[in-house]
Image 1 (tube, rainbow, N blue to C red):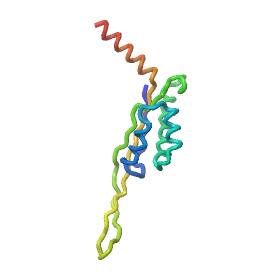
Image 2 (image 1 turned 135 degrees about the vertical axis):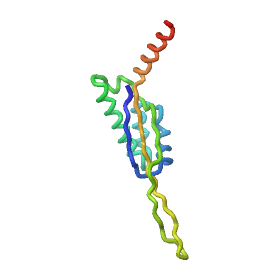
Image 3 (image 1 turned 90 degrees about the horizontal axis):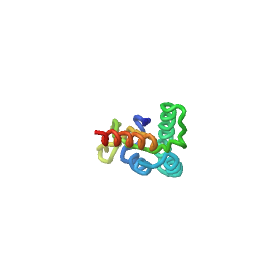
Image 4 (image 1 turned 180 degrees about the vertical axis):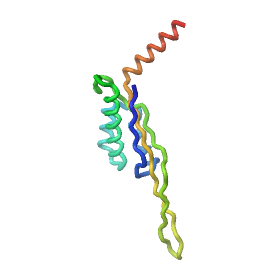
Length: 130
């Protein structure tokens, strides 16, 4: 069973967040946490906290199962654009330069490899019986 965690209106562009999310997509949870811990990007701390939240959400959904035994991995990780704060900065000769402060929505989905393998085996057995 998968678990989802979302971070809404994160300060920073989705393009910069995608650079960090590409590093952890498909990795085991422990490896992803280590990558985020030692990454120097500003958004990596927020993504690390979000990943821990997704792990806790998974634990609450699957009571009695341990994270270490279930082989959790980052199934999906993506960043979408959010609203843009538009500001103006004074420029020479009475002009104004447009400043766009971008926000993003970050979503992380974690799932267990063991459960997904069991579900695949069950679906294969059903197909072979037909």
